[in-house]
Amino acid sequence: MKEKAEALKAEISSYQVSDKEELEQFRLRFISRKSVISDLFAEMKNVAPEDRKEMGMVLNELKNQAQAKFKELIASLEKSESESSAAPVDLTLPPIPDTLGSLHPLAITKKRILEIFERIGFNVSYGPEIEDDWHNFTALNFPENHPAREMQDTFFIEKDPDIALRTHTSSVQVRVMEKEKPPIRTLSPGRVFRNEAISVRAHCIFHQVEGLYVDKNVSFADLKQTMLYFAREFFGKNTKIRLRPSYFPFTEPSAELDISCFICGQKGCKVCKHTGWVEIGGCGMVDPNVLKNCDIDPEEYTGFAFGMGIERITMLKYQINDIRLFTENDIRFLSQFKPVN
Ligand code: DAH
Image (cartoon, rainbow, N blue to C red):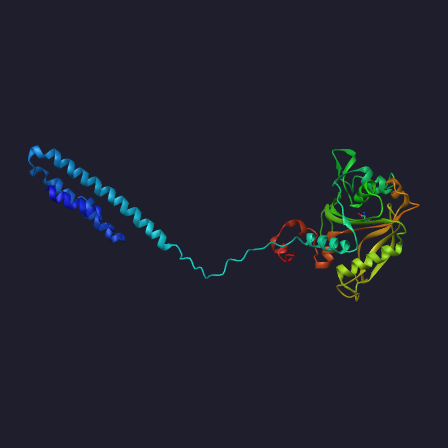
């Protein structure tokens, strides 16, 4: 009996299985109630009483060994199954392409505007979005009771009438002129805020870019030529411009800047409302009062300024008909704009 137990011990320790069927064979032979080990236990009654203790130990050890081996075989079978079911790695496959994001259309427009003006010597300047009355209005020659100062247009901060969210990027003009002396050629892009109802055409948060050129002998002809240069670079080389007399407190004379409609080639369409012209911003010669407010002598220096809405010219350029699309973050809209380096 002892020899039988030894033989089984050896058999168990070298036992290998390669599938569930073989595992079941092992279970039937060594673990089940009718196993060879159970048979040996049944034979205990024939063992001489003085040998029983020792045989009992041998058989218990055998039983434990069989159970431990059974667990081990289950584990190794599971491991090999999970390895073989994983897809084999094919090193010849092309890599999964990176899904590149695209620049936001407003970022594309801003980048292009800056590039166009950088080529003619304009640098870039920034100012705060939370502004004081001086930089947003007073220094820009807004009369005391100008409607733009009233609550309907401006977001004031915590009921302090002196602090507001800037309503235009013209405030940066003042900051630059206070800090630097002419010659000044600068472009100031940024967010602006107006207390307006959101609709297809208007938003309470939008972007502008402001331009400022101050030096000796800067004339209206320089302004006109610069606007023409920009319009051709941005909208196409056949673009024409038109300056319509207008009013802004900070420029004198002031003008509204129109470009020839590049969509219909001035034949008349919905975008230009059949006039052949579309407005893209305001401009003019810096009012002498504004120069004075910034400690620049208007007898020595003159300048021009202009301001454009980035949403507006992006909508024109890409024929986008709802300003709210810019802030909705709909990937179906945004992914139509190709990445630009
Ligand atoms: N600040 C004006 C606005 O928000 C735009 C503007 C008009 C800016 C004429 C200028 C300018 O610099 O000369 O409507």
